[in-house]
Length: 245
Image (tube, rainbow, N blue to C red; front, side):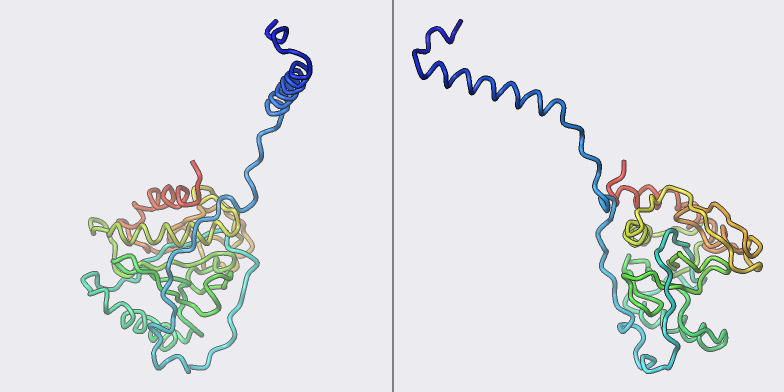
């Protein structure tokens, strides 16, 4: 034995160190693999331009307090059916125009979308109430609860190019909002219709994609065939941003 060459006290110390090493190795092998901690799939919050940047003089318009849900488990993607060839510096003016239409002729209390994304990939806060909270929107008839509406500025019918910067931004905001409820962007979630004017009669629970097109909850062509075709890629990108494989 090698220990026979180690005299006296040195041999005793060597034996102790050897035993400790064996015990440590066994313990490490038997130690269970740690479960992924809660919140591990939460994506980073992307940069969001506050609504004050586009609201302008309408900031003093009276409106009722925002309404809230307990969490966001799905997002609906829209297009705004507006021109595509805008300068991104004009985005605040375009959002203000959408706001004026929805609160004017439609008599809504606020813009319906929770977020808006321009073709340069800039994300804007839409509906009031706080981007970190589960603000109840007015974007998808029957499915405004526990969801967030993300509007792509433009018209994305069949054959229209969808800017990558825009789809990446949609994925980023979806990954962050869904991560707060630990929702996989590639999953389906149960949502209960609150209005029979949706695709489902009131009270019906439907399994819908966690990142859905407007047309999956309501009878419409929105968000357009071109943007709808990009939703699978958006889901995969959002899942990657959450750290899912």
